[in-house]
Image (cartoon, rainbow, N blue to C red):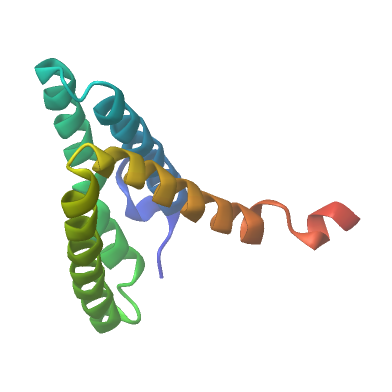
Length: 126
């Protein structure tokens, strides 16, 4: 069972995931705007590594009690689907489309999560 104490400094899994998402969005925006600046690209890649580097560990920790094998299957499918659509983006629009596509996908994911958890009917009733 995961508890808030399972991460260092009392950070909960939800807080870690939310901060990872925010850093990823800031990075995508930085890369989209500063695509012709070497400094922006270096800073963006560093932030991208910080935001995404711990994702696998965070998810494996959250799934330690169940469905760990499914985690591997889903990661492999995500890599395959991402490679396919990334190739289409690269072929049709070039590498400059990657940060913008990342922002759009992150916004869609945030909208889906917020719709399900952010404004529940129970919270509006009482």
